[in-house]
Amino acid sequence: MVGRGLRLIRGLRLIVIRQLCRSFSEGNGVHRVLDAADACIHSAEVVAIVGRSGSGKSTLLNLMSGIDRADSGEVAIGGRIVTSMHEPERTLFRRAHLGFVYQFFNLLPTLDVEENVRLALELNGIRGATARERSAGILAEVGLGDRLHSAVDRLSGGEQQRVAIARALVHQPPLLLADEPTGNLDEETASQVLRVLLSLTRSRGTTLVVVTHDAWVARSADRVLELRDGKLIAGEAPLGRRGPDTERIAARRTGVS
Ligand SMILES: Nc1ncnc2c1ncn2[C@@H]1O[C@H](COP(=O)(O)OP(=O)(O)OP(=O)(O)O)[C@@H](O)[C@H]1O
Ligand SMILES: [Mg+2]
Image (cartoon, rainbow, N blue to C red; front, side, top):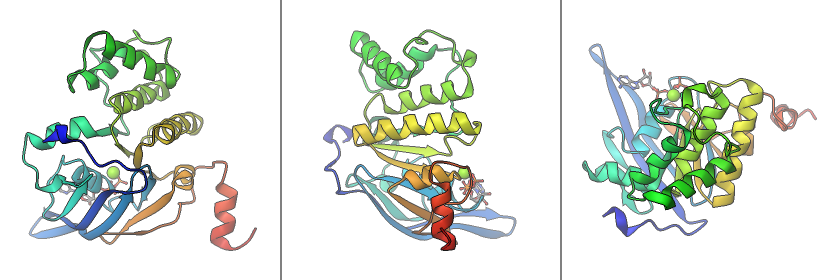
């Protein structure tokens, strides 16, 4: 059952991906996207997933979160095998133990800022003053303490993404999955949002798996995994958006400093 909790000792393996396969039918053939992918991610690690467009990064995250079903292989999170759970266990597991941040925020426009965040607590049975205090607290941490009752569609893109980060972390999940969280933001806003994301996950010891094309995020991660030909391999931070370490990455890759 979900209430049994997860084994969350820092440095231990939190996520184990074994021989994970996922194909999609295409015309008369089959498009093999994940082809016996293997990986292991430790508790409190920040791991960037990179790979060219269409390499299967979102597919991988959807399998890790149990939104999609694998053809074969498995994903275990905290010793629980997500890939063999049935509904509603998968939904309850996802709600209690995972947080998500997407490229397009996915906030509910009929709820205000604080209500959007509080919903993640209410879905886990935390209500009333406790829920309101926790929502307000994390919104203050992401710099939106004075916008609690604003309509979400009145906020800027960066502010909306900070609400989404607060919503993803308010119930203190051990694992946060983020799929191109800055893909829809300009460079300066992206950099602010990423600093908030990394500082919150680092300070809470949350494991972060972030799909990104952004060199700065990948450089700030503990490890980069690249999806290539359906497999996860040790990767390097991509050259791209300029960040504090862009020159250092370029020098390391080219050997010229
Ligand atoms: N439901 C689906 N049905 C058919 N094909 C799919 C489905 N979902 C994904 N695919 C295919 O799987 C491949 C990988 O898609 P995915 O969205 O995982 O790539 P990605 O690495 O996230 O790309 P991007 O960087 O552009 O977001 C693509 O070729 C895509 O067309
Ligand atoms: Mg994608």
